[in-house]
Length: 115
Image 1: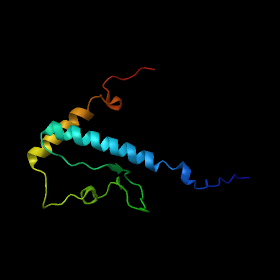
Image 2 (image 1 turned 135 degrees about the horizontal axis):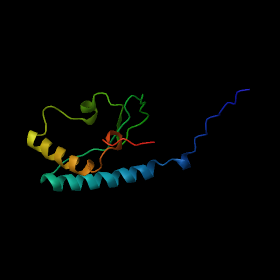
Image 3 (image 1 turned 45 degrees about the vertical axis):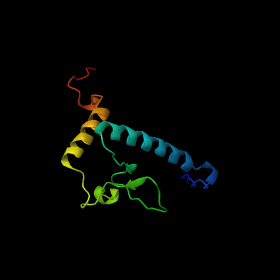
Image 4 (image 1 turned 135 degrees about the vertical axis):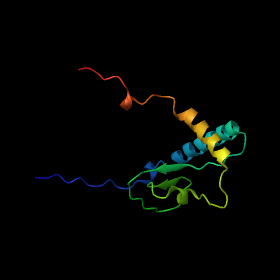
């Protein structure tokens, strides 16, 4: 006999939307301040959550951009008439690379583990 799992009832009091919105705001402000300070110019950032390969159904608008990895420039609202300069792109890439590449990936380590 196969057991059927029933979906949970929706309980609005258990939603974490407000908490998540607060975390996103704090992260946004921190990144905005850090990046603008690091490159020496005002940089505009936007919170984005990418879920490659997922089907995403938008039920309402949100402050957080959510997309499945297809056509990120369109989702980010980047318009060709207002592009970043090559110099600004390089400064931003450098800062992100310095901040995010501080750990060696374990999956690509040169040493093999012996059993």
